[in-house]
Each structure stands twice: as structure tokens, then as C-alpha cells.
Image (cartoon, rainbow, N blue to C red):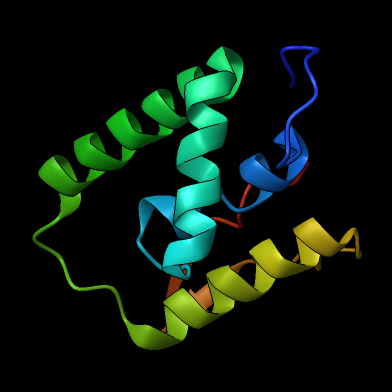
Length: 106
């Protein structure tokens, strides 16, 4: 996704780290770069707005349940594998004997 205009921060970098931005898990200097990018790039701003809305909806609907830390670690591990282009195992993520569907594969 790109608006076709050159930016100091590439659209792919912004989209690869969008959830870190949304979750306030990046340094302030990187946040500032992303904010500047969103001011310049309407497709990325639109994607940001969509992901922000989904995150708020999930929090409102599911925010009362605590996520086990081992499940979070497994999901984040799969996300890292997908981002790096490595093969993702086909087995489901299991926590405390409960089956949880695999993270969506690209």
C-alpha cells in the first residue's frame, strides 16, 4: 500500500510496525516519524484508522478477559515468523488444554 509519493518513512515500514505504534510500544522518535507519515499519506492513515477502530471494538467486546501470557508469547512468535517470511507450523496454538485456532496465515 502506498500513495505513490515519496516519504521519509516508507509505507511498508509504517505498516509493518503499525501495531507497535497503536500499542505505544515504540520509542517516541519513531512515533513522531509515523505521525508525520500519516499526515502525508492518506492510504496509511486510512489503514491506521481502520486498525485503531478494530482494536477498540475488540477491547470493548473482549477486553474483560485476561489473555494468558504463554498464549500471547505464542501468537507474537507466529507473527514474528510471518513477518520474517519463515514457514509457520500448521499445528494449532494450545493453552492449558484448550485449542485455539492458528493465527491466520498469509
